[in-house]
Image (cartoon, rainbow, N blue to C red):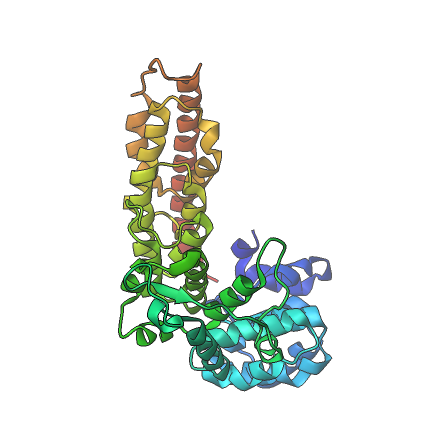
Length: 400
């Protein structure tokens, strides 16, 4: 509703202080809705505005004048509360550039542990930063071919060997490595994962003689370190937005060669791929694996779902129905389908509604439940189509 309110809603909120919640919740308006403001106006709003207004201002200025946004933040940084510093610092994430490095390096010494951690994360995303170089040096010292890790004979040809850090020194902590592991994690594995995660991914092809990400992911890893190494590479690929590494770690959607075996890791890696490629991968995954692990993967796809993905979801629902299971086993996917399926898929869905015949493996009354669910999904898609038609017509006649 707040997004729908748009610029008029924000103007109305300025006239009625009881509607101040709009400014506390709304993010920066779209560029075409913003009104011109002077640096003086921005200075006053930065000094006197509500917190959400200041976040919106910083976000807006950051998009067009990143240097001025950084200067605004630097002026009041020392006086801000720790929780506000954290959120303001996160506003620097879009458009992160080398010019931000001095400010972020200074934030490594912030009083707040959370602010220090975020500063380290942002610096490691700047793959040319001094912190990234320091992490690269540490990572190279931890990972080598088996022969280079002390001369022991490799158990498998070309195996990668890991020699995790033996201590977490003060310099590592300063660069964002958390010394104390969570319960159930070994110290050395914990430190190792953080170091590799923060190192630029470009380090590894160079370190291993020009091997591609796909070749490195396919290599065996000695002494049980594969899961830790690949998980750290996954986090680095997501942090650095590296599509090539994400593809290598995801592997084929229809095979078993994924370097990232955990569902959560696959969902995060998909976010680094272009939207069309992401949707195609998920469609292939659904065709091969069905709906059992679909919700988290689908939730990361751009909406409305492209035709290939929408058809894959409908087909997977049909297969689940034919298998005789109950529809509430897939309630999360059904909810996403109501919101994310292109209304054009209604015609394909209509063909499935009356085509079901229960078999001996079907659970009692499963067919009736599926028919009800499909009818509800159809009704929702038709309603969305009508709403879109009405809103499109209104936008053509609306004169602000």
